[in-house]
Image (cartoon, rainbow, N blue to C red):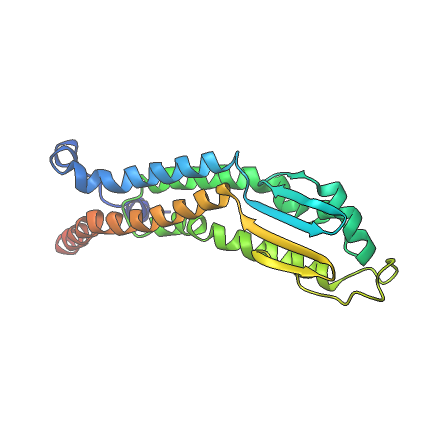
Length: 224
């Protein structure tokens, strides 16, 4: 890998004097990337998803909360009700995702840290996975719920009265006498806010460094 190729990836450098003179121009992308990192780190400790199950035998409802790496709440009770219709335990869903969720978030933080030092279009490749993470989270959640709902145990006690169905990852749903209400958690809201901040960061990043990239490319052409 040639030095020139590495320089094109890293992008043009800004002198301390120029950075000081135009601190808002060159400081905004880095500040927004830092803010996004903070949002992601805080989201690690907060719920990403809530589900309430309303059933006649539970007047106050049953509640489950999903974090990136574990489930809390009335999971055992919900699994007990799901058993009657042939649905697998919620603990069996997204096992790999829960095992690696914290590490993926730490990786995202590292990628954003690296993106702050990349002054070229390659920064987009580091930021894009983080931008799309909230959508991927919801899609993965919906796929798991679809898989569980469409693959009911035919030997379950109520298998003859319940047809396969697709639970909803967000909003109101249900089957038979059971009603589910699924809502995003504050962790997912923070991750979504980080995505919005990163879109703004890319805009200001391009506005700050694209002119320098073009100047550098023009200088290289003149020198060859």
